Length: 441
Image 1 (cartoon, rainbow, N blue to C red):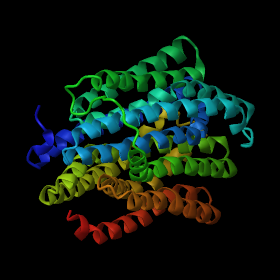
Image 2: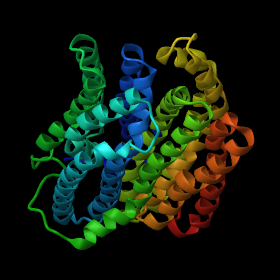
Image 3: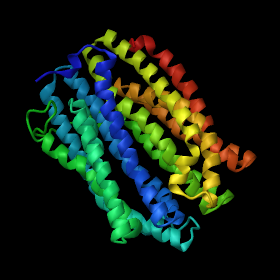
Image 4: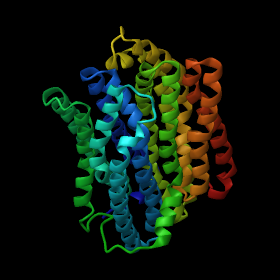
């Protein structure tokens, strides 16, 4: 079987890895966006607010799976580059089992606590009921969601990026269809949206179980060996991505509280729409970073500094191009994008339009920040990656959220994201230059 990592390091071959993952992450972002689209139009903006209010809890699930997936992929592909194939497959199987155990534990704890989570938020009875209903249904799918996040990256690492893309598209389409069927036809409300999302995620999980059960795949299930060092390395390498997902939930909670204070539940609905726009653009950057990360790990393990240097330089150009296009599109399509979720006569509409115009400049910087963190993860420098992710996603954002709204009100809430991304960009650039000689990229 051909080893795709031995191909020439050209833009065409790089994009063969990256384009499927970009398409994949875009469709993954649709899972939440489609829920919001159907919920806001078929149920109402109160239910849309509820989806965002449950996001901090859901971020915990995402954080664990992202840590094990990104960190584990870096560890395993480095071993593949070092020609330790058997050991890599043993570690791969062990980490998948670790995901299943973690998923079962989180699901059980979630059901025990779901009634208490929203009690202290001073929500209306309707919004609180929507939150509990959505989360109760979502928790049914924690294990498939963890497997989906892992199999998505491992398919890419195994040279099956096209299959990963197909699974994501199929899951996204299934989610769209089931959202309409369960909400509009069977009148299952916001719980139907959660079930549709969970079943959409399950597509990749099922395909992954079949794919990695066969010995023909570069990565495949083997007799698992419990190596504590592997689990620790995976957790350390993926800690930045975990921190990013985890603090995203915390920051979302801060945004929600600020909006409830200054505008009320309409503000939560408005910021939900803006997050969908940012999520879509961010998925482009994340998709590219996911696609090239296994290549970076492989070239680093192989000691091929020439290929590594070319890949990193080309990646910066690609991300810059995506950033410019994203900003132009966001400004040009602000009103049509918001109108998809709410009518112009709804007070949420004007809030969301104003917010998107202020937040859009952040799109110029987010891609470089995401790639910087992903680069250090792929180079097995989880410490630097974690610092970047933690400062960007939490420290800088919290500082901005504590200062700007107090001075500028609602405008300060919208400005928090661009200011935090600017600070993160300056730090990412500084660390990138500092470690350039060490890793020879």
